[in-house]
Length: 611
Image (tube, rainbow, N blue to C red):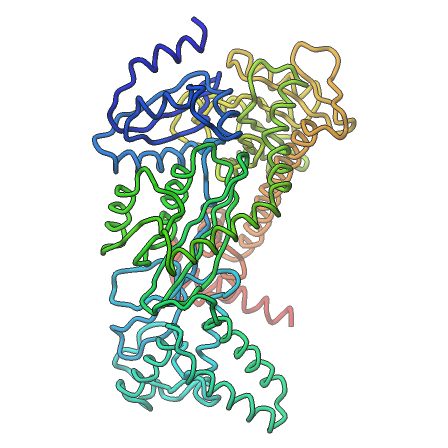
């Protein structure tokens, strides 16, 4: 039965309930994950010619050879399940925000008698007051420095407790702290200053501006020009914090705004933040998802709030989201309070949305060529490699292995993983060669790939659970033969990339393939080979350094291989061991007072000899 017939049959039996659908390619790889209130209606739309589709969606549909679906008990569950599956499988045609995309906030813990002002990335329900998020154009660290330049609140970490310091620190003497640690200020007096800090962060700048201007004038009179420059820069930052806006907004406006723009092939989501009636900042994110605007915005918003807290009172979008009520319910629960989510049609909110949309359009116009180029270097290179190597299937997941050692010592191997032509660093793995002594790269490769195949069968590690479409080994015919012995019955495609002439060797082919020097396919192979080499070399150097350090530690009386290893495991670096006290060294397993004292004395004697 042809694939198209399979899809036609499965479309007939689709349920009308809510759920998640998973589009698959000819190898069963996941192309796209979507959600639906009615699975039957939503999935059928992909294969109906009467339904208008974006260029990106047309490309997706052309690659779909099968699909699966999961029925959910309700629509909120479908929303959450889709988000979890996207993060787990990272399909090419879905949005996937960077894992480290979280913004800083400024926190003031009002439950403390003398609260400090600090930068955090996670919000807690601890009675603190939070301001932000702060974006690239207005950094939290610069804002914090401005606060300390204007208002003398403490910078020291930790709770002051009941005990008092014996003397004031330098910040007190230069006017940057009221020294609550020594009892020089009452709780009420300090609290009044904290209220002024919160007023500044809420957009009330008059008093802060007057204080800065006075300090600037005094610094100029004393000819302290470097300090005057700092005050002048802080005044400029203050202008950015409370900058004038063309739209007059009420001070109770706390909005997160999401505007999506597309040219049919690529898209952009603009995220704009409004706090206390002021626009704090705006950022753009490139989008290559193949869904419609409602799918794209809801996916983006779900992933964004996975990494960032929900602090806005309202979320504005420029599309009527299919899962609007479900998303609102989910985010309200995450926030722990009331939240509104809607598409504004006019007024001040409509003007803000138009500004966000204009920003998205402008960014898209400027970056479409760059996005297309990146797409060609990744997905385009994968497709070209399939053709040039005459592979049976598309090499969506590629793994590359490299061996590193010096005269057979500290033998290691690296495994790097590229998915759809892009490096996935979280899937990288390193190996120590264990089965033999001496240097033998071919034997090392056989050991590593044997362990890789064994892990594939176990399926317990996310890095090893998915079968690669293509494995590349760094080397020519010899290394390829070693790999072929292990992979012969796995169905995994194999290639060897020789360094000298950049020739690609394939099993059962007497002559190598010479790809054009400027081809995207060869450049992709070079990228993954060089990345495997870098990763292996880095690990080898680390082990070699640890071995040499361990050998030096064994010069200390009473410290053998086991204790040397324990010291390194506990302190991580030899510099930390050298700086440790006897009591700290005694915290390491196996170190009593006598041996700890010898370690301490060893490094003190070393300092004296170095001096």
